[in-house]
Length: 145
Image 1 (cartoon, helix red, strand yellow):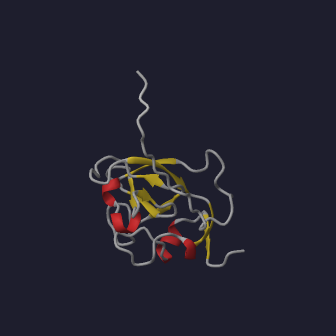
Image 2 (cartoon, rainbow, N blue to C red):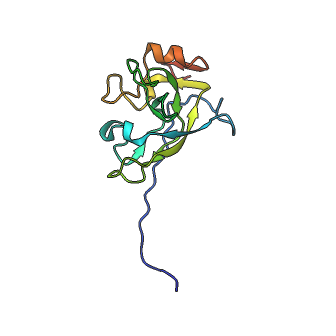
């Protein structure tokens, strides 16, 4: 029997205004990663149920999962590894133990003023001087060409 009931699907309009060019985004240049959903803060990182593209990420040494970069962290996320390339849907915002896959931008040109997380935001995920130094293959600027 065919199910013809009405269903609703939500989508996130991708916003990559922080990305200044497609350089570094060719297929195969943004490695697939797994995100530790429990490490993200709802109000900061996924206010509408989607992790925002452009969040600065670090890699948790013990698990290999990625979480928001926090400069002072000692679990591995104190070293910036890259930026979340595309928005990622949180499968269930009530159950934060389901990790999700994403893509990591590790090379490119970025306008840091347009990154989605403001400096000092709760839970990290923003760029600072040490994060810029960690990500040597990403050129950060504050001016849009």
